[in-house]
Image (cartoon, rainbow, N blue to C red; front, side, top):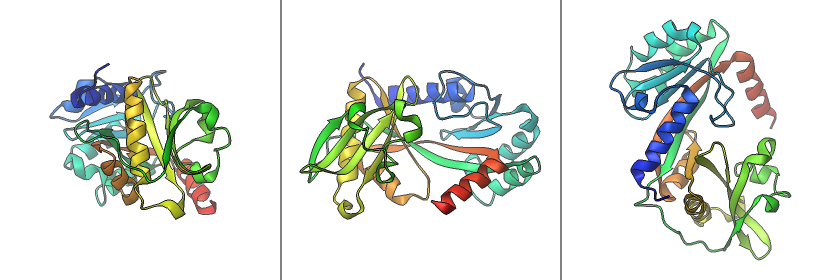
Length: 262
């Protein structure tokens, strides 16, 4: 398959449509769209569908994929503020306050990146790079490689690129086959080896390997994770869409407790 930037974006739009239970064209409208969230076997594997409230923004309008009981709240919210401001404070407190009355809270806020084929290229690395496969990952499910690999979904970790100093792995980018058409990249570099261009070399190399396998690579980062966002940009990726998801208050509390004790 020959990819262009347009076909890559189209692939992402179509996948988001599966995830949200809408049409790909819904993300390109001038008016906001609200649809009912529903389970779909083709959705990204890590999504727990249906969702109570998930807002998606590709730069035009908001598509809200929701539990129908929250339609009045969500409709009023997304139509009261400019789309880009619905994903940030102080405005998001308006939505959070209303959802919290029914035991929900804003939980996930993330920015997603797609490769720009005019910028994606092989980048130099001071270490040897090796393409890795699932059989090479077995001893790597440790905290230091937890951004690149996911122990809970080992079966999805399908391809990687490692940076080696002799026999020592100093950096790892790996991807999970989160859906049929798109593979998500995560990357880790040992603290002592950072600021040498390893992460961007690994990420760009893996993205090219993914494209050769006729899949679309994508990259996700929190807005505040400046190091990760910079890596995405250096690697030849550009912002494509953002999402904001509400989950139960108990789920949020559990995550806060887990992060506090980690």
